[in-house]
Image (cartoon, rainbow, N blue to C red):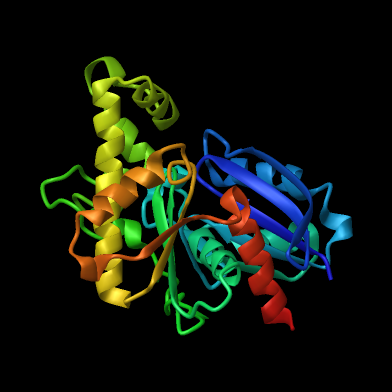
Length: 289
């Protein structure tokens, strides 16, 4: 059976045909700038059209909360304010195929867990436009009754920190994410995106270096908290920021400053930017078996 896997993120949309654990075809596009329901519908329709006839089912991984087939966002700014988007219903209508939907970080966590034979417990963290996560305990992926499980980017990092789009103040996401890094930039760096700030950090620009270090420090503290909550032995880090050159070593350095009880094995995402696509496909395969 061939799965049409779709990954909906704040920056890009991707679609792939998946056989087993292998991506046989893939395409992507930018997430619509307007990010209205109509724009997202049009972009998804164009993205999946070439793959529709070759697939037997659809598995979609999306940023935000998926509950009852409906997409909402704990941080609406990551999806342009989309609220109550009927994701499963829309994709069912345009593909005429059975559709399963889940949070993208939860899906990625499952893919990364499957790439770690012998592990029972693992936490996945994605640092990208936002900060998300997925938790696997005793070999089971935690989703929660309302789909909220694993939204670790919305745990508190700094009570006096910047306001987060979720309505709280000082969330990890507001500091460590790509959007958070850009929002904290000042003076000559104001208005630059995270990619540009990382490039300047690599060139030795002091403010850029501190913004990246602040993100890495915040993530390391989150990992220590995650270890205290789950007692996981492994944390896998993915996302465009998490996989940026030199970022994970900084996280590891900051984590090493925490007491030994909070230490874990840190790994970069094995499937890198395709973890969400593959995880969604793998979960769908198990569901339909």
